[in-house]
Amino acid sequence: MATSYSTTTTTTTTTTTILLLLVIAFFSFYQTQAGNINPNSVVLGLTRSSTTFTIPKPSKYSRKRLSQVSDMIEPLRAVRDGYLLTLIIGTPGQVIQVYMDTGSDLTWVPCGNLSFDCLDCDDYRNNKLIGTFSPSNSSSSFRDTCGSSFCIDIHSSDNSFDTCIEAGCSLSTLLKATCSRPCPSFAYSYGEGGLVAGTLTRDNLRVHGSSPYITKDVPRFSFGCVGTTYREPIGIAGFGRGVLSLPSQLGFLQKGFSHCFLAFKYANNQNISSPLFMGDTATSSSDNMQFTPMLKSPMFPNYYYIGLEAITVGNVKSAEVPLNLREFDSQGNGGMLIDSGTTYTHLPEPFYSQLLSMLQPMIAYPRATDVERRTGFDLCYEVPCPNNRFTNDPFPSITFHFMNNVSLVLPQANYFYAMSAPTNSTGVKCLLFQSMDDSSYGPAGVFGNFQQQDVKVVYDLEKERIGFQPMDCAAAAISQGLHKN
Image (cartoon, rainbow, N blue to C red):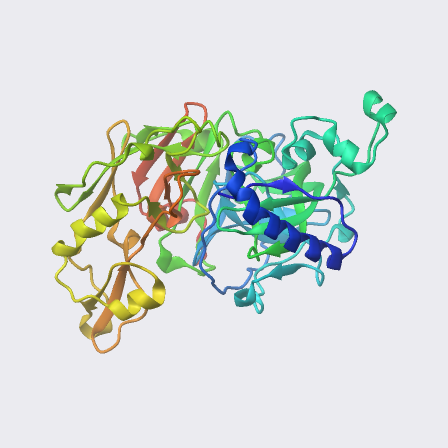
């Protein structure tokens, strides 16, 4: 898995791009040195497919302000490979949409109208969604200092003086704690090889209160102002448990948050949004909520792990699930990461292949091997579509069994999904699970956002547990006023 690490401050776009390429080359070697990595410095997840969409116009906000951040509700917009959170940063506010990611800590936004550069992002060249932040257009924006806790964290330093030494502070100013030089530039990487480079910045962040009509300005919010990325064209809001994460900076680490992801059929629909709750409202459970313990990874303590005990296909329980999907080894590897920034669920071999072997004899449809070769999915089938419309096909049910006797029956659209519109009364549906990379480093499996659709997921951080409840998330969105007629 990838790790975050520091770079020296750069002054030009060309220098930054060259430095980023050098970091990418170094990163390939650095991954082999896993045993020496700072346990708080690894960022996971973010396996996404390309997509195109447009940015919505900023809505009108009430002038009413909260006296403190208590309960919050924010709209999440469904797109093809994740869920977007709208950030309003600066004075006056600038609107930027970023992915919600429970598998990382840093919140970052693209910076510079013309200077922002994404390497190996050809699929996004004509994408107008991104939106960029311009610090020079915000009267409240300033660079974070080298001695701040956020700067020390982004550089994964064990010595609080390191970042200010790198920034050029003298020993006397260090001892007197009077050095105010800016935090050095950083590089931050993601599990699928994505990498971003930028500067740590502070500015006002506007958030909603307990309704879409109440807002609050949070001063001095710390985020990455990123000028160059590799395979990361859109910003990210980190929802991990590190000091840099959005829930941490807003004071929700002792409470929690919850989301109800809209089904994929609502992707790019600007008239409806998934509800994201933070605070006491998020963790108040109903009678039908099932909770599984939140496992603590000694290697990646900032991220959210759960234990998988079995998978049932139809009425047949799977072969024994490997222990590493619910336990950690002596180095901290293992466990199942629950990650809103990874699109599809990943399972380790040979367990993944055993699951495919269970499914195949239960499905009578012909295989669509050409689609399998083109998409990379392992099980695709041609299904009948009367009047060129998909029906609820008789695929076997799939149930995930987590620790504490939690059973989550997946909606069929969460695992067998149509690859394109039907033609000649026939369509193709594929199993949207994937095998985990052949590596013993990091999590043994990932529970992705596609399998979390139409399920209310509660991160109860106070009681160290994660809850699941199947739910019509579109109906939940309408009940919260997150739907435009």
